[in-house]
Amino acid sequence: MSLANPKVGFVSLGCPKALVDSERILTQLRVEGYDIVQSYDAADVVVVNTCGFIDSAVTESLDAIGEAMAENGKVIVTGCLGKRQEVIREAHPDVLSISGPQDYGSVMEAVHRALPPKHDPFIDLVPRRVAEDDEIGIKLTPKHYAYLKISEGCNHRCSFCIIPSMRGDLVSRPVDDVLREAERLVRGGVRELLVISQDTSAYGVDVKYAEREWRGKSYQTRMQALCEGLSELGVWTRLHYVYPYPHVDGIIPLMAEGKLLPYLDIPFQHASPRVLKLMKRPGAVGKTLERIHRWRDICPDITIRSTFIVGFPGETEAEFEELLDFLDEAQLDRVGAFAYSPVEGAKANDLPDALPEDVKQERLARFMERQAEISTAKLEAKVGTVQQCLVDAIDGELAIARSTADAPEIDGLVQIQDGAEAGLKPGDFVSVRIMGSDEHDLYGEVEATD
Image (cartoon, rainbow, N blue to C red; front, top):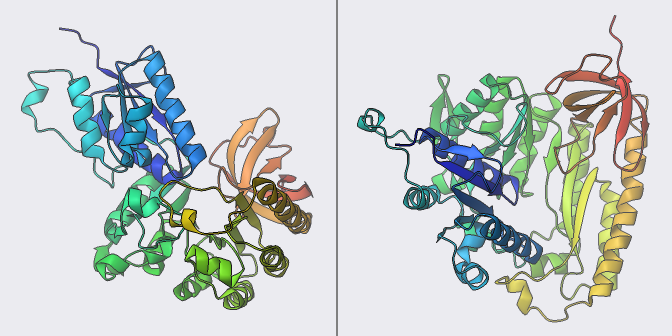
């Protein structure tokens, strides 16, 4: 009998929510005695966790499956694209198994069929342990930050989005489970928690904000109560995917008090009331601007990140100009934008007056040029200030860090010129005197202490 553990290769694609799914599958594989390997040649079977949100993600996922089939031949597919089995089977009919997102049981069953766990007559007498949600397990992020997924699914039906058809309606995790997971992550060295879901501000609505106990105190399964609990852990907590509900106003004082990072990721998507109605998104743009100004009155240091879609079907030049005017008025700190692209199964595909690709790309370029001016000015205003930063990496003489205004992967960086000389290492907090800036990033030196 071979003493070697069975070996699994793993490919993880998609958003941070899919990354958390990958972490949970990998953790269960390790619990059951599988080794995780880094090459196709070394693997006995390969799991591919796919994305299927937009057409380019579908193409990337199908390409990844094809590469794994060509290099290994034994492939198990899971993730969002798994909800469209016919697309996968048409391209790759010989994959071993297909399952949808967060279907960990089906993935493990497929692995067991393809590659049974190593038999040990002594260990087999012990009941198989299941990796629990509040165990740290395997992380695919650096040691000092982690994604904290608080719910699955979404109750909204935005016309451009097919996420509910892939991940279902909102299902919130119990607040005590989330807080215990956060606690274990912090004990394991995490210095920054990135709260993610499809709709963070709707957290708990499906369970009627049920109360649970943590550390001897009662907490509602609600975004503000969760944030209050996370603030007890003494690390950075950053909120992503916040829908602009009125009750979001309640967490801004927590940011002003230093209990929560002054950072909100809110996908506004557009600024024309008519286009927003077509998107099935909130359309009270005037109220949105009022709230942004009010948030800044309460917490002047708040960073607001958002994403937008330009070139939506039927978008007129005047409506696009409304969007540019909104940028000028809102003065958002971090912005991403996409030219509208049809997604198979999305209701927006049925809307009339689709725009030509060249018009969409021209508007996207104008949008990003306008935002670049705003971003450049906002970063220039930070020159001469001292920013609290978290170090991500050391690169030669530089320390690559992020300020409170910067989420990993999607925002800017702070390059600390004397980081190596100062002895900094990943996971360190450091005060940085900002000496320069460009369109995206800041540059500085470690602030001398008395």
